[in-house]
Length: 197
Image (tube, rainbow, N blue to C red; front, side, top):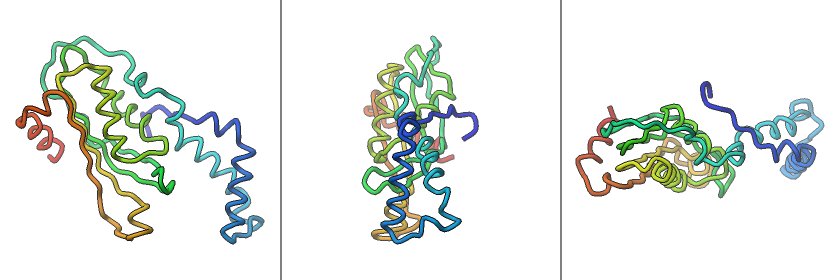
C-alpha cells in the first residue's frame, strides 16, 4: 500500500525455516504434491506473505499516531475510505474493506497519514472486525483526548463469502462512538452524512 509504512513481522523471519516446513506439511495433508513445479516455492512465498500481513504485531498502535500538534481546531476532522486488509482469527481467512475515522479535536491533532498508519497497525494481525473498530476508537481517544471520536468499519469476509453460508458481496458494518458523538445526534449525523458523500 503506497504511502503507508511497511511493518514486517520479525518473528516470522526468525522462524522462516519452521514456517516453511509447516506450510509444506499442510500442503501434503490437503493432498498436494509439494514437488510439482507450481508449489516448489510456495512455502517460501507464504512465509514472506506472513511477514507482511502479520506486521501489526511489531508495533504498538498507540505509538503510530506519533507526534501530535497543538491546534485550535474544534470542528469535525474525517479521514474516510482508508482501505484495509486483515485476517479473521477464527478461520485465518482474509477480510477487507474501508475504515472511516472522524474526531473533534480538543486542542491536539494528528497528522492525517498517521490515521492510515493506525489502521495498518491494528489490522495487520489476526483480528475480528468488531475489535478493529473499538481499538481504533479507543486509541484515538487515549492518545488525542478529543471531544469525540467515531469510527465506522466496512468489511467483506471471505470466511462468510467463500465458505460456510457462501454469501458473496455481503458486507459487515461496525461502529464505535466515543465522547460527544454519543450524546450529540447532530454530530453523529454529520459524520455519517460526510462519509457517504
